[in-house]
Image (cartoon, rainbow over all chains, first blue to last red):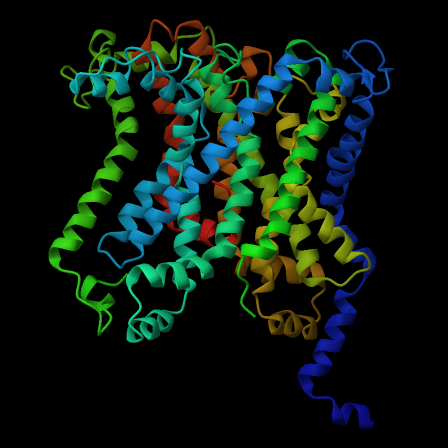
Amino acid sequence: MTLAVRESAPATSRRIARKVLGHDAGAYLFLAPWLIGIFVLTVGPALGSLYLSFTRFDLITEPRFVGLANYTRIFTNDAKFLAAMKVTFTYVLLAVPLKLIFALSVAIVLNKGLRGLTVYRALFYLPSLLGGSVAIAVLWRKIFAKDGLFNDVLSTFGIDGVSWIGDPDYALYTLVVLSIWQFGSPMIIFLAGLRQIPQDLYEAASLDGASKRRQFWKITLPLLTPIIFFNAIIQTIEAFKAFTPAFIISEGTGGPVNSTLFYTLYLFQEAFSYFRMGYASALAWILLVIIACFTAVSFISARYWVHYEE
Amino acid sequence: MKSDAAAHVPGTPRRGAFGSLATHAVLIGVSLVMVYPLLWMIASSLKPDSEIFNSASIFPAHPNLSAYARGWYGLKVSFGKFFTNSAVIAVLAVIGNVMSCSLAAYAFARLRFRGRNFWFAIMLGTLMLPYHVTLIPQYVLFLNLGWVDTFLPLVVPKFLAADAFFIFLMVQFFRGIPRELDEAAIMDGCGPWRIYWKIMLPLAVPALATAAVFSFIWTWDDFFAPLIYLNDMESYTFQVGLRTFVDSSGQSDWSGLFAMSVVGLVPIFVMFIFFQRLLIDGIATTGMKR
């Protein structure tokens, strides 16, 4: 048996392992719960909602095929859709960059090797963890109310604040602030990324006389671009899906004057307040396309600004 | 964690004690702004309503717990019931996620089968899929099954590994477990199930625990699904109960509302205290969203 002689012991065991672990049927048994879920809860319903988006459907009577009517109406004759798009894009384009800039700035300061890093990190992370709760949305509503905490603080500086939640010019910005307040989780990812940057790069740069500022622009930032990209994608998708704070702060209306009518809130209203399930399905597919486009553009643009090391 | 002196790179000008002190001052300032709203909420839950208005203080003049008693029974079903409902759902979600996701993750990480790459790509794809796209047909499905106003629509998907994020997390972890261990076990006559049960799961406890803690927190915090599936107040989760409380008496009874908000945050805070390391490492290594 020349083969057995030539094969080392680990190679033999690897070959046997392949045999034992290589049964299709056995593997699909492990995968079964997930596979059922994929078909029954994801692929099936996704195709179902694509079909429903071409129908009129109120849950009680059978869906009636209406062709592109839902889409035509959304794009040509739906002021609330336009309002929701405006609100959502304003929110995404403000909240995501501000949150990431803040997260990165704090991460850089924390990465200087200060004492008490773990305490600061925990404190900054806590709001991220709690932030999804209804309780926090309630708190926000009270902080930015006419007689809330924020105006109390302003009044000590002699400023007489308005009801920030009740004013259509400001309501959305209180939600942007709420999002920035939850900068902790991207910060932790940035911190982990900063620690991956080899210290000798900075030492070499210092020896060459590069200033701290130059080191930041030439070493830290380029090497961090993959992490920035990752955080930006995750946070953007999350921001598009934001629902709870807007729902609680506006009592489900998206008010005042549609100023907090997040896209998801509008979709919820169409589906579960007015039972226009076909229309809401069309809205859902438009959201999917928007998110997909955003992600695709990000990935294409990444080729020009994200630095990957070989 | 390095001290300032240890981090000092030779040849660069030494940042003085003042620089370090200033940084700490800024960080403490930021911490205060971050935590102040939470402290204010706790303080307000201990104040009478008259004291909350126009008081930014976090020290109640006459602290008392009456708002907790008032809030607890503020709706016709008590918050005790909502709390229990949420706890039951969250615990079932944890069990479902850990079981189903670890099974799928084991298959992806260790087994060789036809279509593996295809299914793995599908799994990654579902991570990006906004749930709105599946929402309405799922609702129709659960409605037809007679599951509305039960916990089933909130729990069954977890047993079908619907949270693909945890599969991803566990795949990453399983891949780091040395293959020699599987091979040795196979030599001893173990099949894939014994390896999964006797080797992978015990060694993957950190990953399983991370998934469990995040499952608990996300399920506890979930608002959208309970909002649409639970209409009967007896079946409300804590979040939905709190929202109902906001709409009914929240305008008049701030302290009661704050008291119940604090109660709703306690389970998450407890998780944070006990599993802080796990949560932070989990985020740092896999880049979770929250």
